[in-house]
Length: 108
Image 1 (cartoon, rainbow, N blue to C red):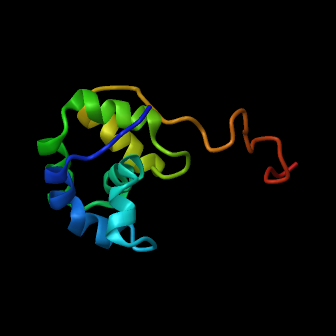
Image 2: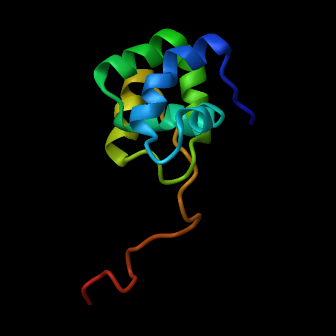
């Protein structure tokens, strides 16, 4: 699925891109809208989250959850958005089929 931001969105999200995707310059982050919006959903401030809800419909945000890059959303942020959006949508796991139970991490 392809995502893009309008010029209007780019102007509104430039500061978030600069602050929340600090390892890229803002223009690079704005060219990766799925990554940027997912990062905002994970570590954004309340004003950032309000901006997301103003700029995107709930359906669009649910789709973003479903297609979020693996490992970007913390479990806490994912659960927050599931409650807010009244959905059980979640991104694909970081390592499909992986489960650390029964691995070297368990005490046996």
